[in-house]
Image (cartoon, rainbow, N blue to C red; front, side, top):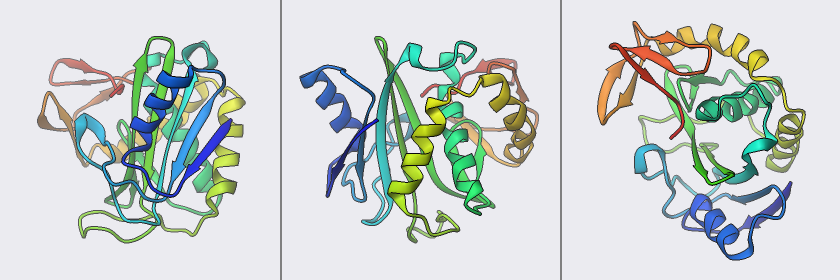
Length: 211
């Protein structure tokens, strides 16, 4: 994984897409910063945060991932692997369906994923410092370079979706206390059913996690 570290950027996700558009995709690449001024969250929302938080975006080709991984559910896959890395360091972090990092009942970050041609773009932001009251922060101190090294090594293992899903479906019960946004509407997850492809069945509708 080639990592480019920036002191400041409007958005790691935007920078990554522009970089690949200009230079082409040669190898897996990650853009890392601790300060972005116009970050992109899910559904086009902003996710900027304070200087000192963790923001990174990375890209792989679609066929890099395990054969059994439904591409529409890749945000769960990449989020859950990072969650496991942080959990091994002592964090109580968990994933609210489909792409939000939580500590207890407060969101501390999230993942966005986009598919463009054969390239999968993933952007992750996690609060390491206090931000607005409605959000939380990671409950452990981390060494960013070490965490990213471990994270990308885990992705390179190409852990099967079946293995990730077997753990995620247990953790999904925590999501049922919350809501998610579907078609710009807040929808309760209380009665949602998790499908084996990572989508959910809610209000007679099948909803995937790719955003």
